[in-house]
Image (cartoon, rainbow, N blue to C red; front, side):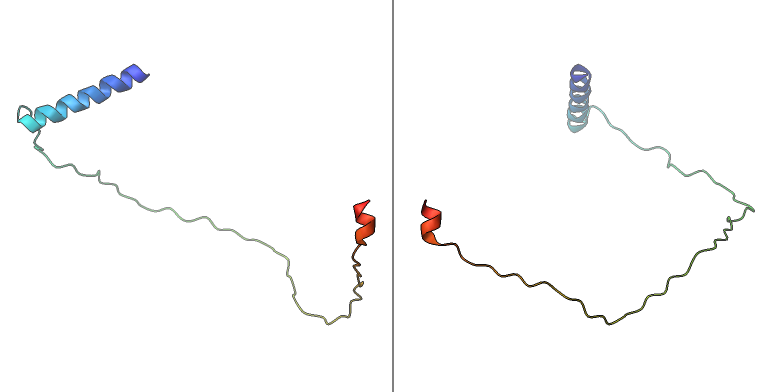
Length: 80
């Protein structure tokens, strides 16, 4: 695979050098054009969906939150 890519790269380099020296000249002789396409008829699909409803509202409530107490450890207990 590497050999094929190396040969392709070498061919491109040779072509560029030949074009730079004026030994190869590539001229466009005819312009390209897109094919003509006619589109007739047809219709888009139609869908019918029965979906549920969602009611969003707010309610005020009182929530009991637990309290937490943090006490520092004694330095003497940590040193042991």
